[in-house]
Image (cartoon, rainbow, N blue to C red; front, side):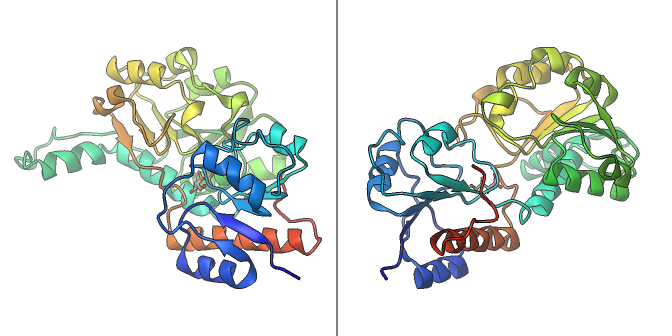
Length: 323
Ligand code: 8YV
């Protein structure tokens, strides 16, 4: 029987690409250039499976095809807000993702950002590299203590819980949770965490707020001017979820007028384009979407996609099916 024809839309770790080529009739993207919507639409006509990432807009326009050849979109990544799920379902296309294997590394980056912004590490590094450090003094780049403070976690799934583990057991932080559904009391008890009912309840309680909810329409601009106004004036906002969860215009104004202590972002609306106003904010740390960027996580994500594909083409239900 012919091997399924599979399109890998970006470069993946070598070990995973090698295995994909052994098991499937795989076409790799050696130039590593993101696909356009038109290229995705064409690919839907000729591949049995497409393996997209966050940089592929598998939009309603891209999915506007009749009788596609593609039967599965095996996403490389846990978030799949770049895929129009309604349109995929209309075509009877299965969608899978890669949860679990990147939770620890994404939480590590959220911790990195929290520490960097609180301790003014970005400002310090910029100063030093610019040759502007003129030596130690008691009042130099004085930041905010992290240990023992209150951390609000928005979205208490796998990554949110890994964040709670680090913050609570590593830094003695008190954990407050907002989550759409109610979190099991045994799960909250592990971190001595308290769940609140609304974002309005959460924001004023926190010294740090870290976002771990999905992107997509339901959470678009969840963090708006009104919620930013409810934060303590010296509190910090951390985002490793999706850029669209924050109204960036409202955040820019909160940072410029110092109505909050600062923010730290790994993800951006319309990334890799960065709103130029954000670049002006000194109380902001920015990373280029590094959440899962470790060798271990990126390989594990790839092998998880392989498992999902193998299950699908061998007639089993893939473990990471999301529709
Ligand atoms: C991935 C992520 O690297 O998994 C996710 O949802 O945000 C990142 O960690 C990226 O999405 C890969 O598609």
